[in-house]
Length: 251
Image 1: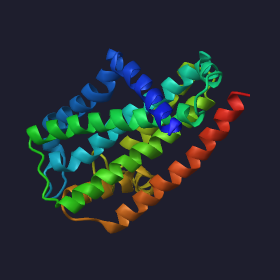
Image 2: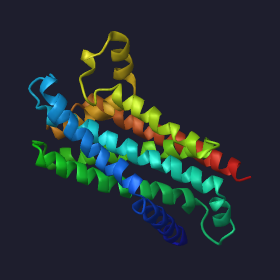
Image 3: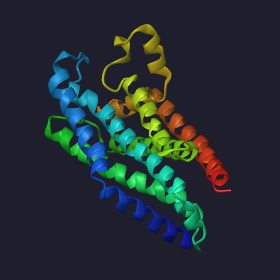
Image 4: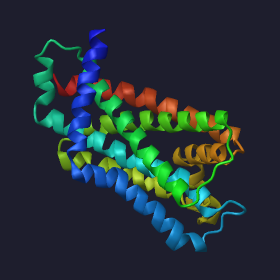
């Protein structure tokens, strides 16, 4: 019971810190909205997405952009806590040690949920419509949350490994590169052959395709299955790496 209480306290601390940062709010909420509006109203007319309207096509990609922006701050925050000796202070207190990293994870999930809801609202206002039934919506939301969890553990690992605050910021560029070289904003078939192969088999594409197919009411079970495998595998791998790195850095 104490672990749950301590995790709540730790996550509340991170959320309070985030909401006080205008830079975080702009990057996590305003920028994804600007990306959505720019692609729909500036580039949308030039994009060929078959019978699917471009706003319906692009929303899953923008949702993943929103997530990558949000979890990138988890990397920065955990690195800041580590390098400023905040973790050492927490370790000297009578609290559950597991709650320290868990607080960052829960805070990331909560803040990303808020950001995703805002993006969905804006998307509906500019014409996004989904014929998906309740089960498809629930599965799409589950896939989004699995993506948040997987990328958050990746972010924490990079933040713990980085020696400097600036080094922790490199994680955002890695995720953004994977996002833009995927089917997020254009079909992979339109890319040069080498990029098409890379985009097809990297994790972002099946995640985006799985979410897109669910929101369009036409589930692509192959993409959904591959996406779940990627998310669960990444979560397990980077959870283990983050815990090992955390213990090593605090020795």
